[in-house]
Length: 343
Image (cartoon, rainbow, N blue to C red; front, side, top):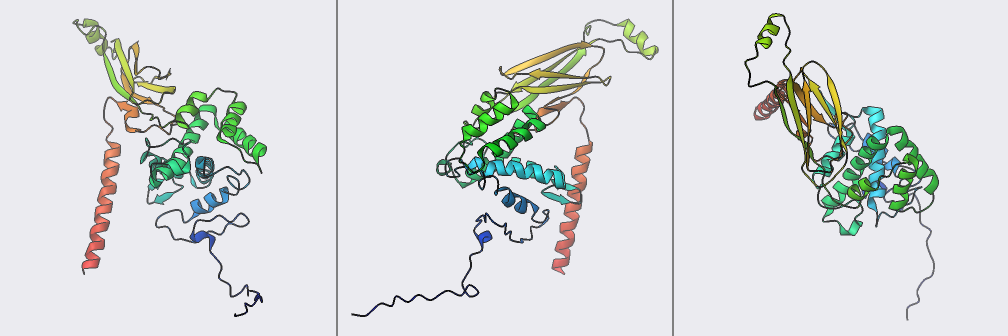
């Protein structure tokens, strides 16, 4: 019988193969080793550096269970990433900035979320997501936007204090999702359970729209001679009845703000709790409504469709001309590239 050798050879560290943690997305808790990928037209690799650095806090020192609550790891870290890159590179250009074409890290996460917005809740276990796309879009994208919207609800300073309180209280421990949510409520002093139940524990969709805007003279049925005389004096004393109708299209219910602009420059802000399916605001003024916008300060980032959040009585041609100019630039650039290649 052959005798087995018990002699062990000491490995030479200079010749031993070493696994690159960045090749598999592994996080190195001691040192961030970021692969120097050359991302085309992106702000180099700042987002990768910041994201992996952030994991030293969210999952490193605050050790949540990524298997059960992935959003507390990747999602809270994605929110931190959005805030840091926004402060350094600008909120609207932290991901993409090329000859006037810009994209922020926050809007990029929003696009990721919108691709799978109604599939799974944030609180879903990692192994129960519909598919890998839903896991990524909800865990990274939706969580970042839910926390940004939360910041709009309680205020930036309060959100900063709540995040710090959560970190200081649960560093080097294993907090649960309720530990995080209750900390936010305690620091803010607000009952946020309705928002958390819908945004975190359910897959409800938020979509509000300005459904209709109307303005017409109160005495539309009369021959108003005073109106003609008023015009001669350079005045228009016509009183208009105006209505702005809002519609909650989906099942996510939360208060929203509305800004209405009149043709005399006056601006009015209203609050709607969203409890009913629709509501109507009425005004009787010597001015007509020219525009109405839901969430004028753009704090609600989980609304599925921003395009129906505003309505103008008269179309603004500037965006159309801007897009046309960009399209002309792109088509000319592509045509030149094809021409050079063909020659």
